[in-house]
Image (cartoon, rainbow, N blue to C red; front, top):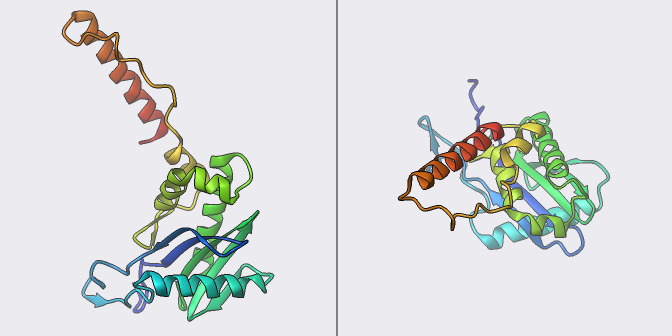
Length: 198
């Protein structure tokens, strides 16, 4: 690896309301464990507390409201952004970071949301499906490292489990039939998990 290069590409992923600038989702990544990786000191998180994060988010939204593109340099950071309906999705990286990699991350987030929700991506949908939003983003970026950018793979990893609960009241675990029923239930669940790729 060349000097100055790092696996830690993403410093933050933000989803902000385009209407009032409020935070819907925000994840800031610390750069390595304790700021150290492989003996090399990484820059500390420039936004360690909520007040500095909110200042950054407010300034970022004000700056992007006047822009027509999808990339800008703000506060010494490369920021890729996409607006969907009434929300803005932002991926923040260091000034020296590869813009194409960050662009692939933001496309993966946007396209995964479209596949997961099968409807428009808006504030209400994101809030109602916050668990899926968090899971999808964690599949794409882990601790600032880009892990996956294929939206179909992310969709399969984040698919909802069946909403119908299994009725366990009729299973007597101490009878032979109860043991057979539990074994069948286990096989069914395992087969479902394997089909989902978990």
